[in-house]
Image (cartoon, rainbow, N blue to C red; front, side):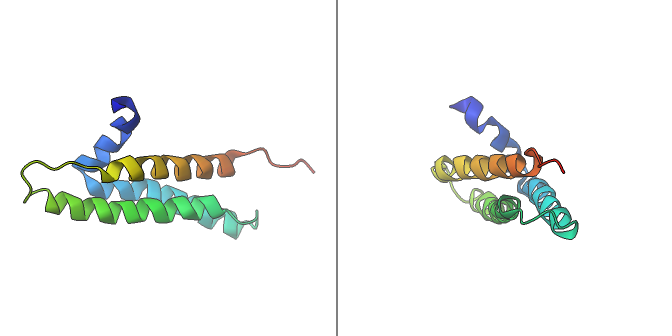
Length: 100
């Protein structure tokens, strides 16, 4: 289970870093919108999810200063949701485009 949540450790230590994936997914969505390649719903969904996570994790980071022994049960829900939306956004961005 540790290997599953290992990528999130970076964001637990520095919550503003979660804005990087949010910016990447928002950029993909914006670029697809500008070149009229059709809607990229999962890119937008992943951008909003990561932006929300950055805000949540920042608030929790501040809260953790007051707590003696925190148990982060929220990560059992947030981790898989972030992975799922990010995976679907990457798939949507790089899926094979029709020729012609």
